[in-house]
Amino acid sequence: MMHPLRRYSIGFVILSCALVAACTHRTESVGPKFSGRLILLAGDNANGSDLLEFKAVPGAPDSHALLTQGVFEAVASPDQTRLLYSTKDGILLRDLRTGEVKPIIKGENYCLAWSPDGNRFSYKQKSPAKEKAPGEARIPAKLYISDLDGKAKMIWEDTLADYASVHLPDQSSVAERAARSSDCPHWISSDRLVFDRFLGTPPKQEQSEALKPNTTTMAILSDPVKFLDTERKWSIESICQAGSAAFLRPHDQAQPILIARNLDNLKTLDPAPVACSGCRFVGFAAQSCVPFFIADATSTTSELVSLNPANWQRQRGTIINRTFSVTATMLIKSSARLMIVGDVPGALLLIDTESGEIAALSNPMPGSSPEIPSPRPIVWIEK
Image (cartoon, rainbow, N blue to C red):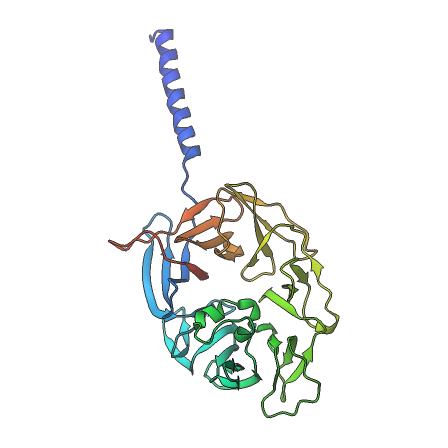
């Protein structure tokens, strides 16, 4: 028969081991376990960026593939099955399911944007400079819409381009001009496009209204195209692809950021202030109109908050044990509770929007740096 003292000692050892194992299990940090593919741009120079694909599979090494080089812009279709991207030679369409690539438009183009139904897209094209006076150039920009076979129609031609108006030199790269996304046209429905209009005329059409320089205009894509001006110029930050909610701010003000239920009537537009002071707008979650914001909670932590799209009231936030630079690019994938962040000097992170857990999407290429230069996530595709 076992002595009672020995029996207690064995029991104590077993209990201690169990407690140690439990504590070890609780403190283990593995980060969020998401499975999918990330398409992103990396690097930034006058010749464009690399278009990369990362595959993230829990418990397995991440795979990394270079899709193409020399890309200035890339934007995924609303259903996330196709990718439009621009190079110095033109606009190309990539099928994200098969990898097939089709050239669509030639020329130096920027400000790519999909229509909500995914059947058309808009873009701007630089035209040859025209001399206004000795030493002062006017740089026209043409706004087009096109179908996916490259059948394009010019909507507007400005005598002063958007990038000229903000004092960007003629030698500035397409990437520099494209970076000013708030100056690019935005689709608010499959037949309506909102853009900044400078002095100019519509193609092959008499202008019946008095021209208003520096105006935010809606183009109704009928035949012929109709134009409606707003009384105030707005800088549009983002429009939800799954609906018509929009974030914008007065063009002559840095703050406050405002939210509008829709942009159907620009003349009577009366947006409301966002209930998130000191927040930075991240973007709308994919496939929904849930807007996300991020703000510094402390010197070492951030808070990720969202608004209820029914009443735009602030929801409970999530604390992330990291701060982000002002140049960080972020992508929200709501159905997977995932936020992807590209930040300098080369961090590429997966963050659980509910728990705040962080995992690094690593670069497994032998002999290469673990950092990705200037990563900009484009689209996350779930498996």
